[in-house]
Image (cartoon, rainbow, N blue to C red; front, side, top):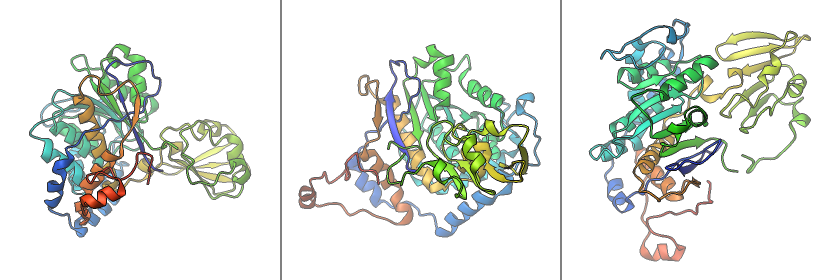
Length: 421
């Protein structure tokens, strides 16, 4: 599902229950040509494949069966500097997480270029960014990039199953106030969100959110603080138009025959008990939307149905007649709960988010109205171009005559804002 980005200025916040936002950086594209002609040291295919395979299979990062399952809220931990303003599963796993972050850096070239290009001027100096995202090695590269660019960061997880515990420990060891561990309870989740916000000596002025939980929490519980937030960066995986290009059928008409049901609507109770009852034996049911509301999992927690844990994040729900369905991640976001994503893909997302924070934080008064904006193609193309040298791809610049013939600026954007692919 294609991601869509939007932006909003919240210098004077108005009532908005759900805010999806991302902001834009006005790039000096005139300098871009020279930068692209300077080819950075390429990461070899061997090291790229090694990074992908190791990140996907390293049991020390993704398997937590040997760890204490009690909530880390119940014990005090300190990093090597004596700091304790964090809550992770096990701070002693920081070294393992650091290796994963270093591997991810190899496949996130644009963020590393951004660090080098903007480190001296520190465009986020004074920014206090509170974040609620998946906490993976790739997102750790983003968080640490924001820190290099001058921001102070506090972070929580947007999903109770997607946190990579060793990576969270590595961030805590580096002094990032992170509150997250894999397998949080619902109460843990909101406790972590609150701890990332509520520090008497620290008030956030920027938000980086994934799914809107953090934004909603601050808006409801800390309205006076919310009014001081300058802007929010938020990504959406549901897209602007979730039905483009798909044949539409009613679930009730096909549910008896399908082998797998994947929800990705962003809505509530899309798959209800009436659908689950009619599914055939062995059907796999899972969700790719952000929240665990698309599948009515609560309707399955009844005395006549038996739950059988097959492995981590995989349950069989068994009906009295022996029929069973496989429910993945208890109906929560599937990809980062049960697996991972390619680092190079996440590099594009993270670079866009970093540039968005820079623009929102540094935008002069009045540049953005209190509104939601789609990310312009000029930003899309700039972020994409930063990644081209990694796989030895180079752009041929249009001549003045060619640009005039096509009706384009020779430096872009090359596609209209409505163009999506």
